[in-house]
Amino acid sequence: MKQGFRFSLSVTVVVLAICYIYLTTIFIYIDRWFGLMTSPGIMNAVVFTGVAAMCVFNYTVAVFMDPGKVPSTYMPDIEDSDNPVHEIKRKGGDLRYCQKCTRYKPPRAHHCRVCKRCVLRMDHHCIWINNCVGHANYKVFFIFVVYAVIACIYALVLLVGSLAIDSEEDEQESGSSLRTAYVISGLLLVPLSVALSVLLGWHIYLVLQNKTTIEYHEGVRAMWLAEKGGNVYSHPYDLGAYENLVTVLGPNIFTWVSQHVGEKDPFFITCTKKT
Image 1: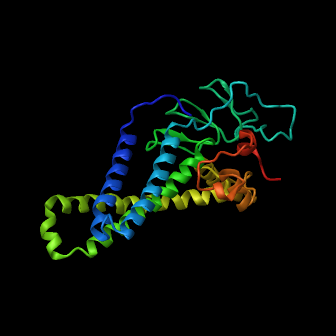
Image 2: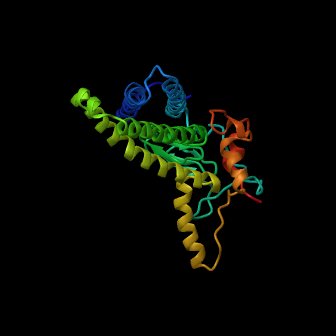
Image 3: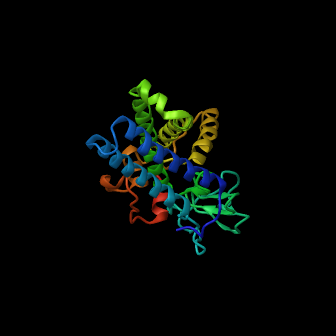
């Protein structure tokens, strides 16, 4: 896990949004559509609570888990040319060395200006978890996004359903506070559903390609330079779609949507290139 608790406004906003969506979905939309004490109401409440619980759990782990720091004892083996950890900088012939951390960097590690340290297989620094997304917490971040998309779409369907069957008598009795709850929820759920779905699609693409967001942008430039020189660019860490999935989500398909960390060595996962 990561270091102790640090207050973050963005994380607080996310927590408040999750609480608001959960409470309004359970006690307003499900209750008004099915009745909270009916069989359909209980079933929907249980299922939505389960999805929300998985979403909160993975979000919490993503916030507090260390994304993957470079071991202080790490040194590249410059004599072993076949060692996948041996990698040189794009410019010049020097080994990858971080001037800010004053230590060598393994392949795919990058220095985060916010966290002020190098992160293994760094994808990006996410303000919404107040943490880097890297080797150690990428899977839980990915799973969080999956459950967040499911929860938002589920809540949006329940909102629309409860609104659609709302009778005129119920509307007169509901008052302005209930209408306000519907408006606020709609303003939250619609953009969240769209944004998170786009984010999920983007990371599915990255997982299937075994790329990080940083590597994608680096690859665009590398592809342009390769085409300019008459060559064909190939991402060096692409092992094939299934192997890429296994590398990120683990070898057991039944743990792909749960927070289960595999037993593979971090350097194997972050540094293995295709042969």
